[in-house]
Image 1 (cartoon, rainbow, N blue to C red):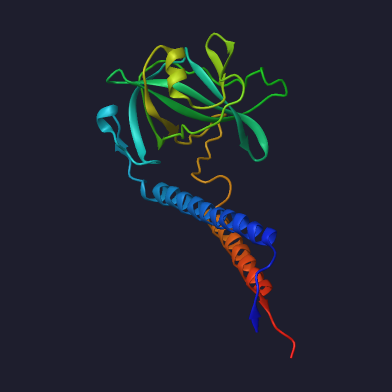
Image 2 (tube, rainbow, N blue to C red):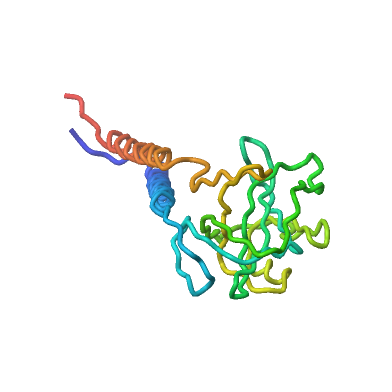
Length: 235
């Protein structure tokens, strides 16, 4: 048996493809671990704590909290491109002033979008009376690529937004916002859909499966290359 090297271009191809396949496998594995951590956090943060503002930070993601204060309905943000059961819609977010005068965003839930995107969905008026709310903490990622307009003013108090960019929202509302959102707990007889799930797309098991597939492809590539490198001489 004699070992010989395949042609140069095949070697270069393997050198290029192997790191890519291993990187994809690692990335899918990390995505699975991340989503599993979100599911674990959602499951263990059931005990409701009183949240009074920045002095209550840090809190874990999806922690169940109770807040007291009043809404600032003069600012209404409609987070665009939110899907529910295959239908496009908006998340409706309104600033909430805590008792210590700090503001945080409260996500009231999902509403379907009309055919005319600029025709915003309607919902019962939100008053500014003092109320107590319960919900879950959510810390949106600030790593995003935005194309087009970030803030689209439909009415003086109704703004369509593409991302939760706290800096720009603070500029519009002329008030600092806590770097988190409260996902308000479901209630009866409301138009909003509040099906809060930490993982809405692929579950961790799917990512682990994709990671294994990429790894197997990398192993197969190496095995095929080794086979091509081995040449048996005829006797």
